[in-house]
Image 1 (tube, protein in one colour):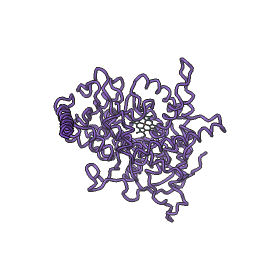
Image 2 (cartoon, protein in one colour):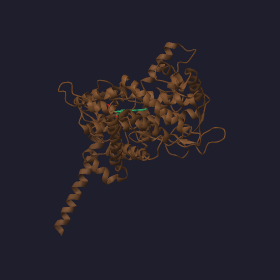
Image 3 (cartoon, rainbow, N blue to C red):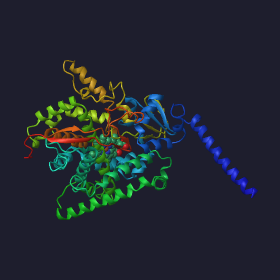
Image 4 (cartoon, rainbow, N blue to C red):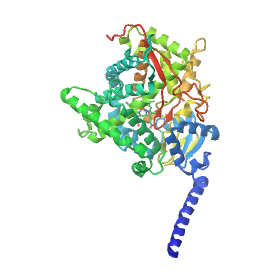
Length: 524
Ligand code: HEM
């Protein structure tokens, strides 16, 4: 009995001593110990996991920068750096960094999760064809068809809440934008979709996506990546269900796509492009069926809530800012003569206020607001004048970057004019001002691992908002989604759209009602 007691005491002492030694090492001798940061963050990565879980990580990072400065030790092995220079040093081209080990959570053969640069280059060569300029031109009619349905649904006359003056009943735009973008991206990738805009049968998928990106966000901060699936089941069962649920939804849409291909062998889509891709040297298929499935499903997740949140945020900010609304409305309504004119191209590109409104929305509500961790490669790297030793993580938050008052004066204000050349001022200086500001603007990230479908996403955003402005009037109803007094640090500004920073962001609302404008609304 005494022997057992001694063994237990010795074991406990060893554990306590190891923990104390680890704490001393992390606080005093770790290469990152010299940077300021929250004590708990220096000791354990679970602090970051907690903020990823609550969805307040973007605010916590911003608060840390305000308290500790540009460099913050946010986790034992990871620092955050907040400056435009640091952003380019970490994410720009030809940098000696790779994606952090935590990206394994996406799967090691999934484009977004690949660490190895050679393997990544091989896969990217195939996948970027799916969203090249030529491919986007082919996708455009599919996008427009879904936007047509979206507009019909949000402004539906048969809506029982419609008032006599033609306004629809209020729509929760986070939900409707998710239905739109999920239908768009699944049509583009698989030719078929769950028809979320017109049927409620699969509306559960939005909850699956939301839970999945929350789970992935937490696991990105999890201490032991090797056992992340097991850890998720034990510690986060209320989130872990989303992975098998996502697989089920993906398989159902793929089954629909196979059936369609039987009856219409000529269909062309991104899934087909991935399936048929061949290695130019061997002539063998480049991707296994499993990798095609995983990557295609990943495109659905990556391409739905991101664009949905950006469109929902556009509705929030434009309905909250009458001057911006009026300028975009006037511009769009005079640029196009009919609905069928609204296409990607020079006229859409000439809508400076529309683009300014979208840019300003992406600045205020960036959808990738968690730190996108990178790992210094062999030999280390330099970030804003500091040496990052090999193997350690470094990151910069897009949310903090977009609120840097040096780059964006009055950063909490939604101000589309900041993106417009101001009349009466020196044009060259104005262009330089906007160029300089754009160095701190990175909603799609920058460099080799920036969003692969950035141009597609911008096309979808601009086409959606141009069509809405051309065909409808809209106004906000109530306060859903906005900041309010007592809501906690960073959540009190009433004119700011609030979101949860999971791996991608999640919002609620705004509630918006619509009224049809009197125009010729038939596509030619
Ligand atoms: C407004 C909409 C969007 C925003 C703001 C956005 C933003 C981003 C950001 C910041 C990244 C970098 C992530 C990282 O470093 O871990 C990224 C990567 C990615 N995005 Fe997007 N995205 C959007 C829409 C889309 C769409 C529509 C698709 C697909 C149809 C897509 C597919 C991807 C993929 C596959 C990656 C991984 C690329 C890689 O690792 O090389 N995104 N996106």
